[in-house]
Amino acid sequence: SPAALEAMFRLAQKRGWPYYTTENAAIFNDEQLKEFKLVVWNNTSGNTHLDDQRAAYIRWTENGGAFVGLHGAGGDPSYDWAWYPDTLIGVQFTHHSSRQLGTVHFEDRSSPITRGLPENWARTVPDEWYSFKDNPRAKGMHIIATADESTYDPGTTSMGADHPIVWTHCVGKGRVFYSAIGHPAEAYTQEPL
Image (cartoon, rainbow, N blue to C red; front, side, top):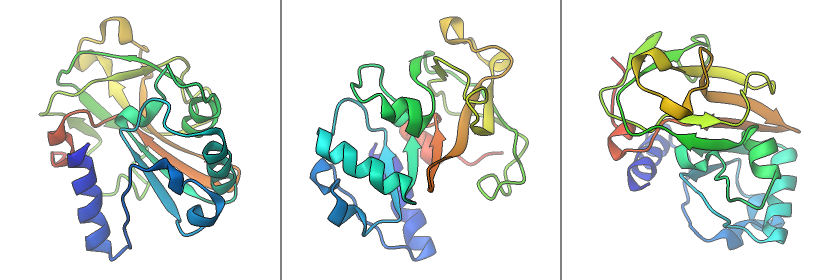
């Protein structure tokens, strides 16, 4: 999403990090990927990579590359690349609720990711609440935040009392961060209160 891209650009500028954006999957080759420490998949969905690009990305990740996946990058069920949802994200996205308000519970408040955030974040911007085929916690993911289903109507997207929506884990030497938050543009400018 353009709003997520702008937020990432502002963050990189603030930190003095080099920054490069592209929608061209041809950059996913051994030679070019070695120039990057981190790759952000900004609401990426669908089959976007050829087999040789996928293989290069797997090698890069397993050898220490870092991945950030935002919202729609959660593994579209139509993907024909099982490694992506099963290994990289860790679980398969299945469906989402309608856009509605709800509360995020930050479970790990000692993480640098959540530094300064409140324990509970009542969203003032309606978002889609993603659900997954399996619970990421049961698959060994380190859970950063969960959705409080008692604060919105999950309908058929309910995962019950434990509904992870932000987590981290490792793939080989690579590090992974995934956040299911972020459908509306306003999600990238809203301050947790």
